[in-house]
Image 1 (tube, helix red, strand yellow):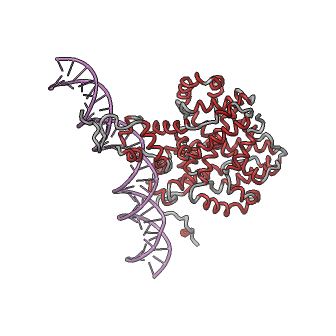
Image 2 (tube, protein in one colour):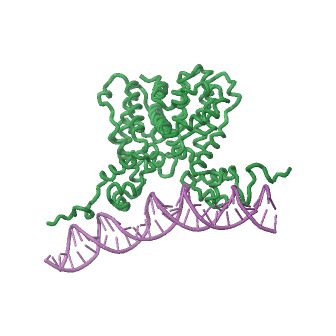
Image 3 (tube, chains in turn blue, yellow, green, cyan):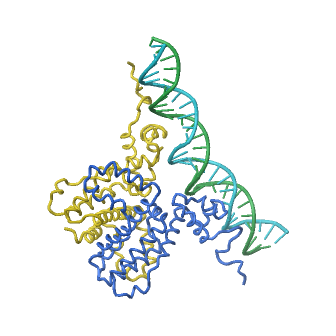
Length: 214
Length: 214
DNA sequence: CTTCGATTGCGTACGTCGTACGTTAGCGCA
DNA sequence: TGCGCTAACGTACGACGTACGCAATCGAAG
């Protein structure tokens, strides 16, 4: 028996693989979601744009695969599953999920266009549900809290990313200067406002969300 | 003397106004953020695409103006400012903000591309800060909780909108069927999961966030 | 009332995008 | 050795944002 006919994976000429394409796409996406074009990915592979369409029917499909792949890279301390403190585990879960989003800014932008969960999303949910169950939270309460953490992280990452963009601080400051004078409370917390989306603030929000847990 | 605006094409002086353009843009955007193109807006006005550039230097600028305009339409019960229950007022604030996002799905998508606040964002913050102060929450705590509500709403709206898209439910179900069997907790809450992003769940999350308020 | 620079308003056209569609080239089998 | 199939890819199209520059109009000066 020869390997010439391995079922469908046998490639012909300068053939590509899904993994190669996704690797290239992730590299390209590091320059921002807008930089992630079929042509850019193809160029990075020395291929023509249409070559990618052998493996992904559409750009959306490629982005979905990319998103699911990075989601799959999230890792939770397996030891923590056995730890006695569900509250700490949930805190860890939230922080790791947020860190993942912040590590891949393009993913946050991509998620708006392709918000559907992929296969790798479910084990993450399972992980969270297990912790929640140990905290005595089940059913609708569990789903709500789980969704809440994800939604919060999503919005939070979006804000934090935009805040770190070049010129964001300066245009924020300009707006502040022109608007805040008429708004006493806003002016009073101006310093804190400039740090909106900071880790410190995130910890406070999560602490509130998980206040009754554990 | 002669009517300088000919009946058929009032192409001369000041044929458009910013408000007209924004009105047209909002109408167009009702078909989704992707439908909001300069050409589509121009078509809706019977003008040429480049005509818009007399009033907005770039598409981003038009979108920013549009976003800020809908933000400005949020209204809070002025009577509630004087009500005795900050907790209820915050709850109201969060719900109204979320409702605004859900009423303009395109805005959620647009905010990813243009996440900077406009002038109308600040009075909203002021409103929230006033309530928070009455609840005894100030400084970093206030900014954190305020940011948290906005971020949660943003992510929540994004999820809810995608869930309501055609085919979303079916592809969710398919994914569920192929993945859930190996995940006992996920399978156990399958029914609740299908309603992720529901109002009921939102209430639960907000209740947790505001648990210590008031 | 005429003339003329400045300004307003917009038409043409370019570069880039995703991708439909048709062409080519290598494989398995006769 | 040849043939048909299909994987692989090149060409090309329509839609996008918008740079650029011409034409129509206005205000002021003669």
